Length: 235
Length: 191
Image (cartoon, rainbow over all chains, first blue to last red; front, side, top):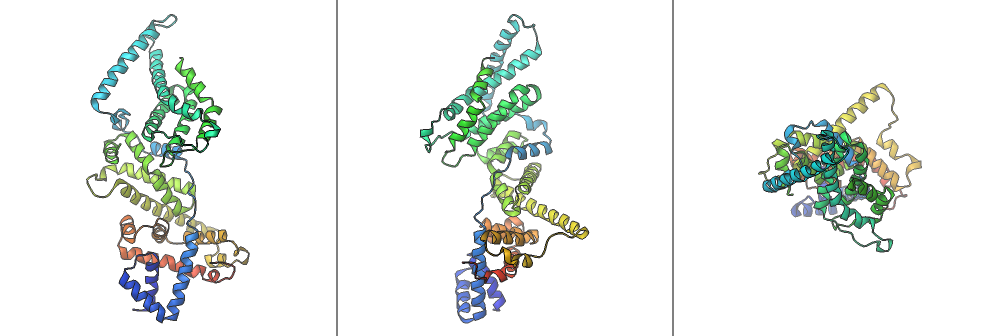
């Protein structure tokens, strides 16, 4: 075999892709051939140098921007907007739908028949349904956010573990509500945007379920998120 | 929710299922694109392109086949990255036809005596050499050296033979060896 071939095998050997028989032949050749011995030393140095460039932190992408662009570029077909409920069995969806109709019916009935409200105001009833969904969403969110909001400094380093699946579900719900808010209820949009940021932060926690709770606590308190949510819950 | 179920739902046109697939795989694709381009903005563009292509071709992915969704997506990511760099190099080349760009060859840049001392500079020099490699050669090198994949896996992702991957790797390492020859033997470096 030529020295050129052996020099190619050096690369495979350093990548641990050379079988033991060929490795043995290569080592024997290096012992006998000074030119290849020098090349072997040089190739190893190059590998060491490149190895150093490996230690590089990958930055965090702007995931929301990326997803929005994907969403914009691929037009949604009718089937693509089936909603969130495919996650559950059909009977559960049917039962939930009936329950929703009942609850919304009661709510609209009360709103429509309350003094000062015109009977049959469709704008009012749609708004009512949206706020009902919003309240339900906030009810589910509150225990999670409270845990972070009441995190104490002396707990620093302790673990807050959140059910990742639950957080992901909340994030999806939040995205859907935010989209609706952007079209019809801009007042709620910013609040949902802030909540989305927190849920994303929690979703990106490491495998053990830990995260940096103080940062999240500061954000919740700075933005007065719980107070703002309270306002919607008393509507 | 299992990946399989998500894929089937996404194939039926469910947007939320596809969003979950995006959430589960975004870091893997972005990591590859960033290692390849060393540029956050470019990596984000590749990430978007990859998922748009995946969504448009989702029905071609067969859930019964042994290959996983992640591998299928990774392969799309590899191809999008190569295409992206090819376009970028084409634009760069056409620009350099019109104006003199401040781009000397890697050898000259590396031997600049003022920039020898730090390893950070060396890192930049290696990046410059990689930048000048043909897109497929660079991809083979990135997948082998940074992503530590087996040659067999690289061949699958790049849709070529193992022999072809080996050739690309020999050329890539050859370029590095030629370009770095002068500085590797400099005494300033403690290797």
